[in-house]
Length: 341
Image (cartoon, rainbow, N blue to C red):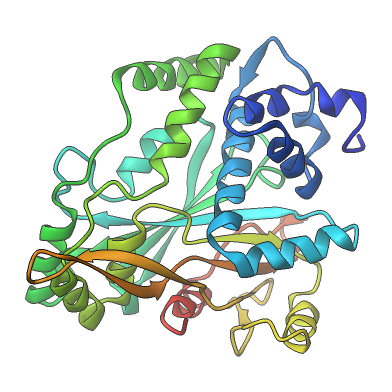
């Protein structure tokens, strides 16, 4: 199926997107991303796979709006006629009491599992005091982007950072209302939803990937920054995509090309222990964020925002399928780009 043909322009996914963003932006996402033809049909109800893909597309678009360097790279690809194969999106969670908001990865497991995702593997990240979980889609694992959900273990931090984290994250609000919870339960049971209910649920799902705690006190942010750069990042960015990743045939060659074009690239390509997964990234863009100053006034600082990543995956000879795993060492190395911004 070719993007832009009549079937695509009348697809259920496009109608879902147009219910959330302007029509031109919805069509731009369809033209930018490589979408499996099995997802680009017009259906009476919305399958969990279609809803999962629509969510990923909107979150990808949100990251491009927040990361100008990523938007430039994607625009370069578009101008060259290259579509983006969206491999996975990553977010950071906090394993600590968060008021009404569920602690850690559980907050997103309750959203992702009804969409057809399951945890494929756990990845310890001890140097970061975190654990990563890879959520892979049951229906189209190679075609629908994964979610890499990392969880910060606050109890492992310095006591000063623990106290700062509790002050920052204690008032986190939950965007999941009773109607959305009911829709998720129906989706989990039936595997699909009527279009109107799917559209309403999609709006809540997109909203979940944001910051839902108040602006932190500058003193607390600086304490977190001293003891955990990852906790400090969550303090300003919340549960927004930390990065989005495009799957490319040769990440080493791409990295050299982007360096030659003066993109701010990570120094080295990360290679998994099995050699089949290779990753690199641009350094995180800086963003202006507000804080509560000691005198009660609002102050602004420039801090690391999100970034854009590239990954090459090779076939696992034992299974004959694409290696969709991650690697703890790779992840630890990639996370450093929010420290180097």
